[in-house]
Length: 162
Image (cartoon, rainbow, N blue to C red):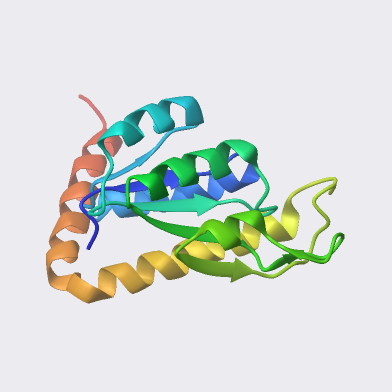
């Protein structure tokens, strides 16, 4: 029900945020996702209680994401975290989880000093898909029209020119 949805993330978490951004935009939601969190924070001058921030951060410790979420909370926007429940290495709750209004926790399968973000990326992508499915079922008739419109627009790219 948010007026505008801001999606945040860095590294592999950005990939999950960006995937959900595309799904939401295609369904007709006013969503934005920028790799440059300085720019996002600048846009937060316009954010208010009608808006939502979905912050993806497996570690829950990314200072840029935490800063942006603090700014959003100051403006009374809803902050939803997609993060781990706890940092098992230090046995402490994720700082992002503590800051958020709503926390959607992914399994704590990887150490934050991991070689590759395999499980964390896949579980964050899955959480984004679940969020998307939950959102579109609320008003699927309207959203179905948007999905058909965007599919038809893209089909034009696939036609061979003569």
